[in-house]
Image (cartoon, rainbow, N blue to C red; front, side, top):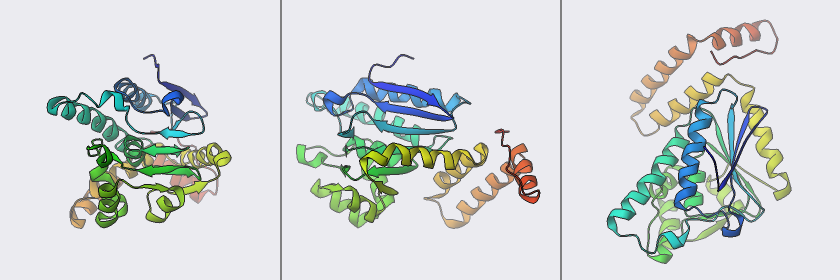
Length: 260
């Protein structure tokens, strides 16, 4: 798939997906959402990719929101389709079988916050801004913001942000648990890569099953969630990587994981 609005590359086991519309502060239009769908789907099947870093080009924005020019003429049916397309891609990211790290290098508003929340881990630069300002223009979040934000920061805090449309800075996002770390802008790339390498040192199949166990169990009663965990634990015990990892530990050496 050719990309007009993304920069896509693979380096040392890290797949990079970079929204590249700096003249629009990397705002999401329909084509960009389609390209994100294709890029993540391709990386899911690429054995050379062990972890994905998702960020924006330039120094001002991760994704500054939706391209408002595409929202002006939406009716009920088109609006529903527009939301469902974005939700499909955020669900793809959330359930991605490899870790996805969001590198928030500036504005991450509206759809930018929604796409960031779908990632497994979020690292923000000190100049990052997050928020769901949709109510300020008569809309509501449509890419999962009303659902993921309460799950990350709690219902009360989420409703405060959703109902005011307030923008928050990186330290506040960290305090609320919306991001995992805050670093200087010039350190963001290095911090994301360091985190990615820490993850890629672990067994690929185990990483995927951790993601699946958390996603499948989070909103279930504890007994059902524990049953899911036991199921996935049994599955990973049957892998070659499990045998290699436990042997390596006992033999006091570095494991050689092969994703099998």
